[in-house]
Amino acid sequence: MDQGMNHSNVILMIDDNPTDAMLVKEAFACSDGNTEVFVAEDGVYALEFLRKQGSYLQAPRPDIILLDLNMPRKNGIEFLAEMKADLNLRSIPVIIYTSSAMPQDIKSAFMNYANGYIKKSVNFDECIKIAKSIKDFWFYTSILCKS
Image 1: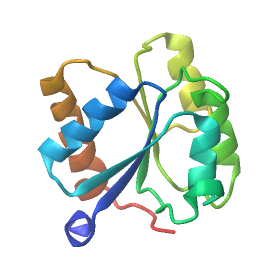
Image 2: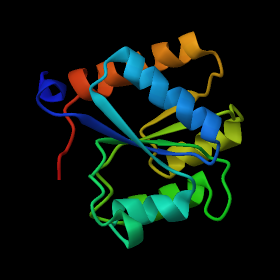
Image 3: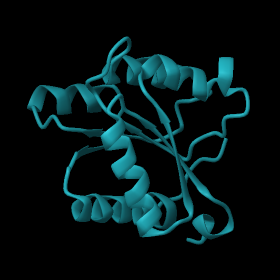
Image 4: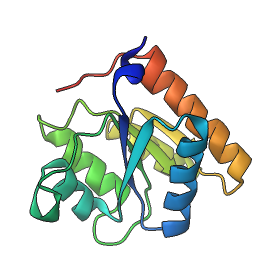
């Protein structure tokens, strides 16, 4: 598919760790340069971003969401449950991107309609491989719902 060729791909990363967010932004920049990564530091800000509320009135609709599970205020599972209950947001794929590989976290994510689950890496080369695999599958192989 060439849907990724015509416009910048948009990812919303929801993560309260600025180092992880920077690693992911850099990894996508190194893997293609055609992906914009926006960051919301918790589920509350992420919902405002998605609903274009507050300081996010001009926020683009993300093509996919990378979601950490362990965050303050509204954690990943709480965010996922609320987002997937919203008919206007439900079609955006959510990939859990977290340090947890605990079976109960994985099950809880998929029970709340996560579309994938990836364990974080702090190794930059591994982050680039992950970014490339996300880009290759979600932006070039699969067809995304754009509304």
